[in-house]
Image 1 (cartoon, rainbow, N blue to C red):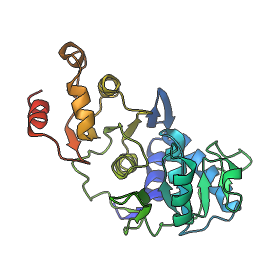
Image 2 (tube, one colour):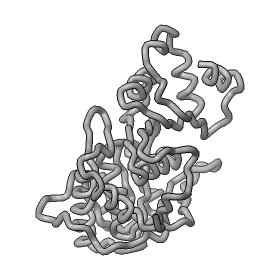
Image 3 (cartoon, rainbow, N blue to C red):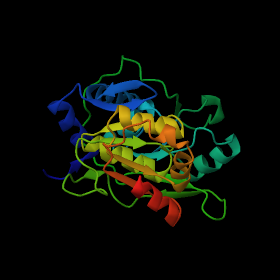
Image 4 (cartoon, rainbow, N blue to C red):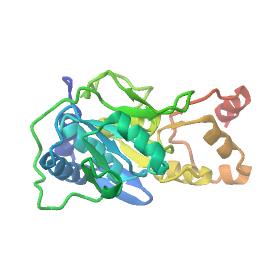
Length: 274
């Protein structure tokens, strides 16, 4: 398959099986066609507000299906999604927004930024069309905010354009497999892994918030094959009583990736032996 834009790659999946589950969060399932339709309407709405290709779109939403719709809508416009924590204090959020200077801020009260274009995280009205937009490739696939070691706001703009190469491997992620996203989507790892799974035809299982036992239940329920966790999450799961850990069938797992910090040798060995 040739390299394509993110929206074009996802649209091919919709055409292949529109009713396949694409994202699930807190028991709510969105199909490929639902993500496609909702993101098209959002993109048309944002375009009517003046959002253009190359603009940053700040997404200040909690983990959920709406977050995925908004990221896809940004890519459909050739814009760049800039995820933000929905729980940031207003002062810290403003510092990042002022630095990013986005063309649109999603998920905050309009009165917070009277000088900017702002929309809620709610679905775009159905008065906006759900037809695809002209194909565009965003110049940057994402822009992630970080305080770094100084605590001063920084924006890490990915140099790679939003172009998808299906032949390019992603840490053993299998096409069509289910991926668990236990961390916040405003972080690089969860956002990247959700995107890669979505474009490879997989099921993106998003946790609204991390809970160690719930993560095991979701792995069993959705036959999750791939998960990326930070060592703290792995440790919290390991601290569950053995009878709780053994209650769940994790035989579907093919790869557990640890990132974000050093993982203790004993914890890695414990998971491997398990």
